[in-house]
Length: 141
Image (tube, rainbow, N blue to C red; front, side, top):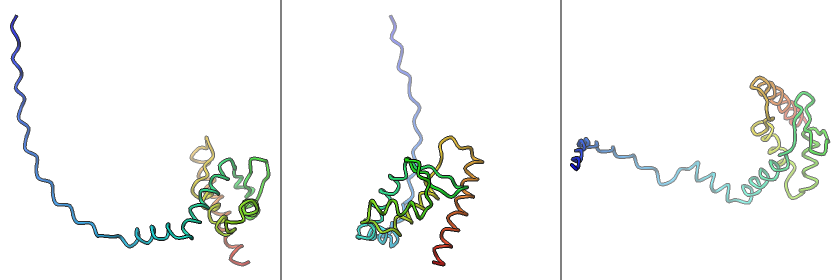
């Protein structure tokens, strides 16, 4: 029995030298400031507020036409009433911070399951108007 010869592999071309990467600055003022703020008591409270509010809103639905948040217990509350509801159970978190995080959730995180792109666009339009009117009313108060 004849053993086949090993096939000769073609020579690989020589790889070009990689260009020198620019040196990164020792620090980035924006990142440094953000990290410093995150480590501050104010930053820690803000992070805790996001975690708390987003967790509490996990099972909340939104009726943007009626401008109500529909809680798991069936209660239909405005933004202000929802802030009061959360603040009553968590008085250690300032109401203004709860309001800020609730509005952030409405703007960026809430997305009903199974909604079409057209429905999401309409939700965005209604929610934006709702939040604008809410903020305008609070500026006057």
